[in-house]
Structures are given as C-alpha cells and as structure tokens.
Length: 91
Image (tube, rainbow, N blue to C red):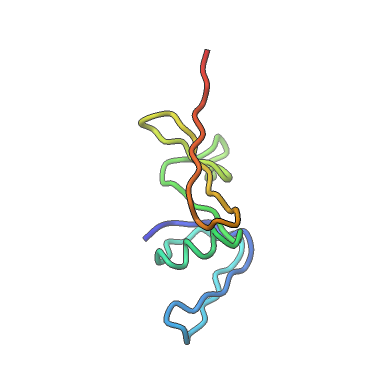
C-alpha cells in the first residue's frame, strides 16, 4: 500500500458503500485506489519512505529518484494520474 500525506480532509468509499474520512495533515498507508484518487484530486501527495527534509518531515510535492538523481512530481493535469520526470542539469 502506498503512503500519502493528506493536505485536506478526504472522503472515499472503497467498497462503494462505507465512506471513510482521511483527516487533513496526516500521513497514512492507504489502498492504491484511494492514493490515486486523492493525489489526482489534489487532496494528498505521495510520501516516499526515507525522503525527509532537514526538518524531519517529508519533502513537499517532489521526491528524488536515488538511482538517477531525477526529481518526480505527480502530474495533476486534466490527463489524469501520469508521472512527469524532470532531469536535473548539473555543471
């Protein structure tokens, strides 16, 4: 299960009947469908284990791919839940 940090309260009915409310400002392991929907709607962001800032929290909006040094950011455009990869230029 992916871990996401909810930016606002988010309600979801995984079984189509029972509604679960995920509170704002919490990070939780959730089913894949919940994570995709929350990120797509801008209610949450993916949290990568071990990707902490100097303050000890999760990095906001971006996560570094350790193998390539590239940064990834969730694409929240109209096309859906695709991933956009941006290469970091170094000189």
